[in-house]
Length: 231
Image (cartoon, rainbow, N blue to C red; front, side, top):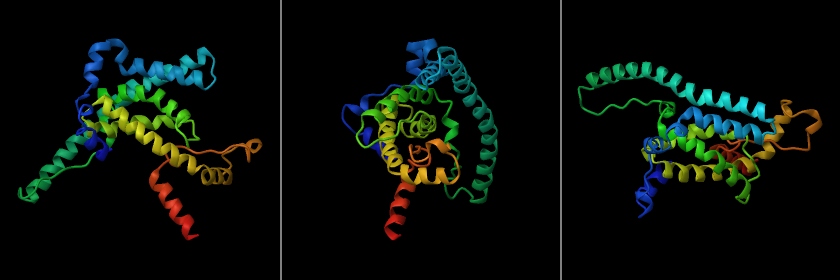
C-alpha cells in the first residue's frame, strides 16, 4: 500500500482527486452512515447468496450492527491501549534521555472507525465482485473473502490519509493480486481441505476451495512456488 500511495500522490491530476469520508458524509448524510452502508451491503450479499428477501434483510441487519458496533468496540479497547502506549513511550523517552524519537506500534484496527474506511469498504465490495468476474486469470468469486476488505482499507487509509479515490485504486490492485494468488493456490488449498474433511464427501473431486486470507497471501504463494521448485 505504501509504494502505491506514494506513487498516486505524485501522478499529475490523480494526486488532486481527494475525496474524504467526512465530505461524503456531509453530502449523503443518513446514507453515508456505517450502519446504513452495512444494511445495504449485507442485504445485497444475502441476495447474492441465494437467500430469500426476509433472510437477506436479516443478513443486512446483522451486517449493519457489525458496521456500527465493531468500530465502537475497538475504539473503546484501543482507547485503553493508548493510555498504556503513552505511558510506555514516556518511560522509553526518559530512559533514552531524549536522544532519539520513540514510536509505539499499534494494530491497523485503530483505523476501523475512520469515516473513509467504512465508505471505501462499502464501495469496494461491488467493485471486488466485478474484478473477480472480469479480470483474466481470476477463478475465485469472493463471497466470503470480501470480509477482509475492511481490514485492508484500514491499513490503506493510514497511507492515503483517508483519500477514498486512492483507497479504491490501491485496494483494486490488491484484490487483483490476491485473486490471482488465491486461484494459483486453489489446488494445494483443496488438497488440505480434503485432508481435514472440510469439503463434504459428495463434493470431493468436484470443487476446489481457496480464499484471499490464506490462499491469496502473496508471501504464501511465493513460498509455495519456491518450495515446489526445490521439491
